[in-house]
Length: 90
Figure: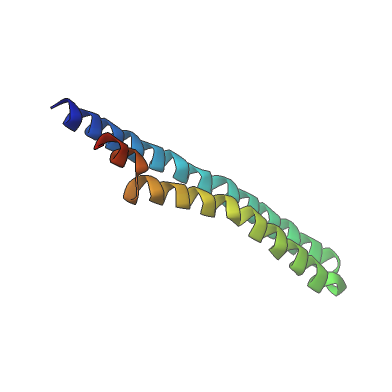
């Protein structure tokens, strides 16, 4: 019974941790929206520099998106490939 209770606690905590990890998707979303707005504003001021502005904005958004992707990977590991559950059965 103790082993079953410990497994339930680990699985519950893992699900909670996965949910909290997905909150990290808010940061990149807000940052990318802000960058796109500023990029559009900059193109409005200097239309001749559109290529440089767009290239720089997209590079920055790609770097910002990696934070959300890392959070997604951690959440998926916690849900589907949880290493802590394997430690309980040994």
